[in-house]
Length: 158
Image 1: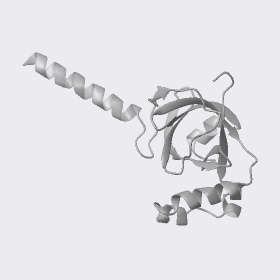
Image 2 (image 1 turned 180 degrees about the vertical axis):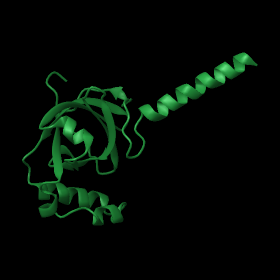
Image 3 (image 1 turned 90 degrees about the vertical axis):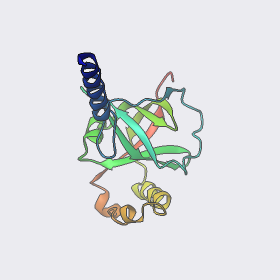
Image 4 (image 1 turned 180 degrees about the horizontal axis):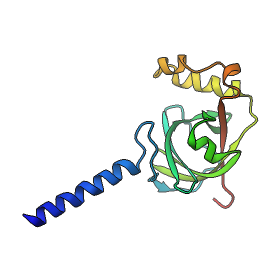
């Protein structure tokens, strides 16, 4: 009976650790998973990909689940400047992105791209499946000081 109780307790502890270590919805995690993959020369079409996992550096790395858009073949992510992951990236930082089970070593670089182009891509992509969320997005003028916009670029040597 003691062994069974010990095994059950151990499994419970492992389950709790995994639950709090992986991202779930808006809660960040620590582990990104996926298979390490070389960055392709050209990204595949991401029109059917709603979410990616993005791991940002820090004393305790943070993995978030976020939306991604593709503009002229480049991948972009947008977040509130007040969010922890955006603050950890700053103007540029090495990140890992998990897309369709493959993990890529990248840099997230704050970009000077016209914000309206990226926001329009977000609205076009996500409006059909998430109309209420898209309707609640601030206008480009309102969001100019609220958003961090990052282009995901290959890391040197990957």
